Length: 361
Image (cartoon, rainbow, N blue to C red; front, side):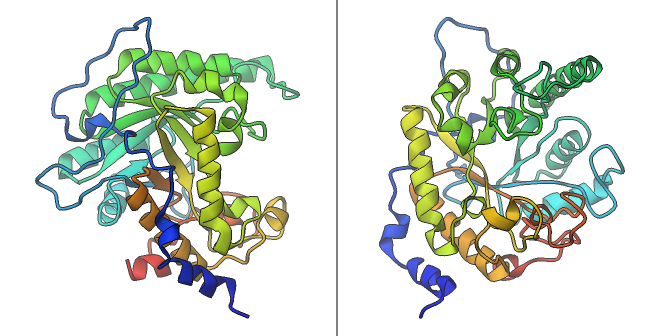
């Protein structure tokens, strides 16, 4: 019997792997070559989506700039709310990332995001940033009822995150390619689930204040629901997370599942561009929680390499913009189990040594 890994490798040369109706030829970020400060737009009665182009300038060799990566900057001993990486550590990361991708996604606007923007500008690195604003609930949602003090504190933090994202977009034109308000805030299983009205309020605030595209990043299991349409109408594009590995898919079936899932999102949001803002394949899994049943494969570096290359080939052919998750392993995440899946999504280890796919990239 041929192993699933070998079967998957065989598919890489099969034309059907690169055939899909899910490509977003019109999906794009317009700010890649901007040199002038961004100008705020005024609110109009009709919603006009901001276009993106991922074609490289004539001065560059690459034909398309739609390959991106999620960037978590925290090394061992560092974490959000704790010790932060130094400027030189961030610069080291960005120089390494720029050898393989043209875009990075960051999840919060304060702290390291501004350091990254400044480094890219100072060193003229060929990178652009999708800046995030981390959003937490301001009202009780479902059966979750944080204390009044917590909700009040969340409101202040949300305001600061959105204002900083706006500031970065306007301060670093040509570096910030877009703003994402919230990460997995609307899908039902989120541990920081928000109400849609609050999120829409902040999306509108950002769109009024910046000229780059604005969206919210969420799981496919939100964007495939009818109630997601109201949020999608406020966004310049749908920003979706699609993980075959998390959804009981073997490697050999991963890309078919991904294309099918993406097609469902397109059907729910006809005419709206789609960017995949998280997609990846981890190299380990633990034995606790959902990962023990939701991940049916035994992931390793060889599987990650095959998935990474198949995704890259398909996305290039279909012109489907995406951010691979992620650049680096992050050992601060998840529980204490060393094999915890949340620690092992990177294509580089936490010490920045390359895994298999990056050793032959």
